[in-house]
Amino acid sequence: MSACRGQVKVHNRVSRQISELRSMSRPQLLDVWQTVFRKIAPAGIRREILIPFLAYKIQENAYGGLEPSVRAEIQRIARNLASNPAAPPGRSRIKPGTRILRRWHGEVHEVSVAESGFDYRGAHYRSLSQIAHRVTGTRWSGPVFFGLKTVKSKSGHDSA
Image (cartoon, rainbow, N blue to C red; front, side, top):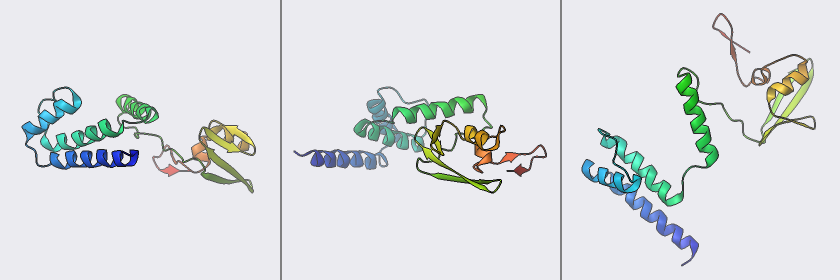
């Protein structure tokens, strides 16, 4: 059997298992939970919550879980939320290849986003703040300097 045909079989099996969840009773869903998670479901968990959790776990078991980098980012966000629940959940990630332009004193400064930082005029930098410092000679928040983030003034109004 070819690898492609095997993948189709797995996909069909997973799709069937997930579609069957909707027609199952809560006790049946709890049995499936114990099978796929290898532990008893949390007490009092509602049927409406069981189904998406089971669907995810069935797919994870068939296709694999999250990449370690994604798990690490989720854990980082969880830690930040635990220490400061009012904080935004995560930093926005700029896709590699993005170009950022900023005019400063009549000169255009172009930054390219790389996998591991930023490229500016033939040099690699770990942060936009390092580049903003190089451009201005003073300490700046790089995201603010390049217009990617606004700062709340003391009056509570946004300013750039």
